[in-house]
Image 1: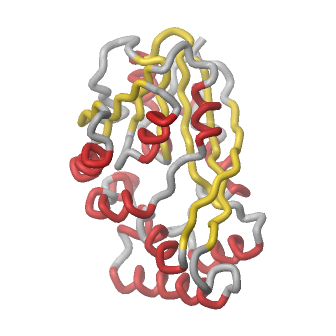
Image 2: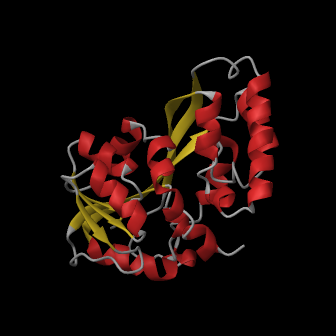
Length: 256
């Protein structure tokens, strides 16, 4: 299964993605922006605008860039006042030095940093910030760890849980991955978060994961069936709404 196939899988599920994917902890967004010289922010790989909405809420002047037309259409529908442009991390449609921060919500791992690193550095102002944010499940909680076991890596992957995301993202912003010289050491911090779900809506959320979207129909339905059965057996999730224990993890580096 290629990265390109996974990367391009979201458009067909753009409406479900917009409905079911969580927002980002505002404390995480504020921390990501804290060292930036200003509040001109590029949401890169913006999807349906989940992170853009959080950026608007903290007062940022946001421009969103997204390569998938269906995702971009959802973003424009949800956030009509945000400037939203077609483009990619490897070809950013903005002038040199035009933003104070580049943030990516659950998207940095899709970038070809050998190309995107130079593009990001180009559009960043001096002392600008690059940060990736990921919403991760708190698998210190017993039922969440159980959910991870029955779901499989297509639904809950290595960047999706607290126990694994630091290792999975630690090397994304170092020179060996193609990010050009001139950025300081990356920092990783997690912030408490949560999402109100029911068993059905959590199943729907997991169905929007890239690995699930590219599965053969029969295999996907079997996987979702196992997840649904597990949630129906757990007292924490079997009856009505519950809060999915989460954190927003942030990986941040500053251009020196």
